[in-house]
Image 1 (cartoon, rainbow, N blue to C red):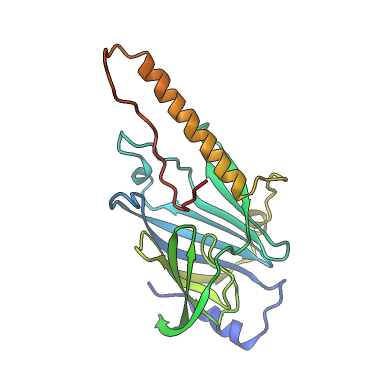
Image 2: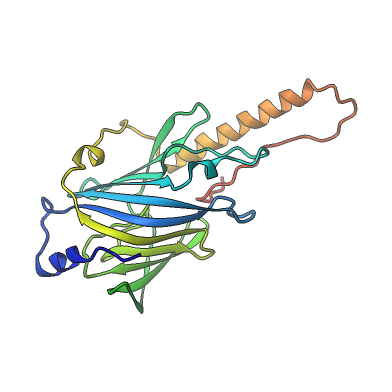
Length: 250
């Protein structure tokens, strides 16, 4: 897909002030919802809205019916996926997670938590000169191609912090793949970016505790169901298994 390039010249010719730095960026995303256990690809339209030092990223499935599980699995999903809010000036990153109750829970994380290794590897992506950076982050290896001519230290999801806008990014298995498709000036999304989030949010440690408690709750529900079963002499014991994109262990 051809990238809208007219803003690139604007970036090169002028030092963009914070007040002028209002942009709407669109990525195409391909995500393997069966990561670590098979292949089932979904396509998303991923939006990155930037206003001054604040940004909001969210993904909308091109086919919402693809989100559902297969009957044996439960998929936790909302209308948007990987929703992430950043504020560079305040050193804040907030991400959203769906809950069993059908609501959205918010957690905070380190702003741009990936420790990038910059390389001299270079390629041109639709007329944009890009350079490669790599990082290992929570159990996965990522590669990102960023464009120094677009001096925005941001990118899709939690990716960012590089000396240029991320144009393309993926993990080493390409279970998660982003490619920039549109870049436009936008002054009409301030309310979207500057929305209020709950204060005193739990951090990533709290996020792990939340899921640990939730898994125990699901296992307890399975155990209670089996104890009421009419099966005599059953020796099996069910347990829930949760696959997380960001891998973590206690």
